Amino acid sequence: MGRVTGVPFAAPQVKPADMAARRVWEELSPTVRLFPSGLLGDEELQRVQVPRNFKISDQEPMFQPGIISVPGGKEVDLGSYDRVRYASMLITMGFLPPLLIPTDPSRAGVIADAFQSQLLAFRAQARARASNYIAGPSIHGVVEAAERLWLRACREHGMSAVAAEQAGGQT
Image (cartoon, rainbow, N blue to C red; front, side, top):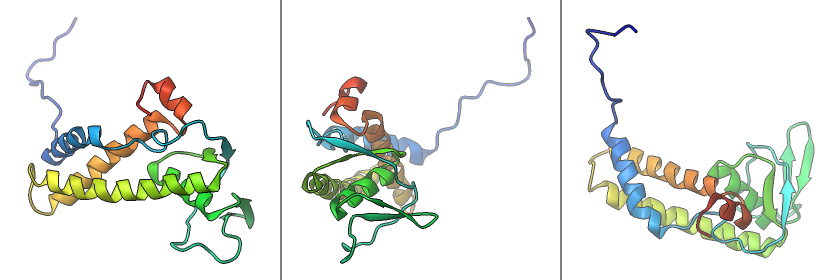
């Protein structure tokens, strides 16, 4: 058994911004919902294969609002713009296709709207709390890192209420 000498053991360096982001997330975690599992009940979900990099317009298209264009000229028809927005929400959160999307377009729209509201509120609250730990332009990085921690928690709880229950999470 050899022994390494002359090399001091050094703990991994944790950046102050990373520490601040973790603190912000710990403070905010009890107050934010985990999407989408936190809003799904017994909704019927459809498994849909969509490209990971699809883009949607800010406004509902007048023609074919439920269509997602796929490379190669193909299209995926989700049937409604609200279901497209829901799919976009899942992709934004880091879920990978195939995605589980509510078959009820109005329910998909309500959840997508709630996510957008929660995202804006989360960013504002994270910015306010980050200023307690760090100053200057680094606050933006802390907010982004805290947001990534929230989205990771969302992904860990899954795309359905059943997945959240299996993960032992809150719904």
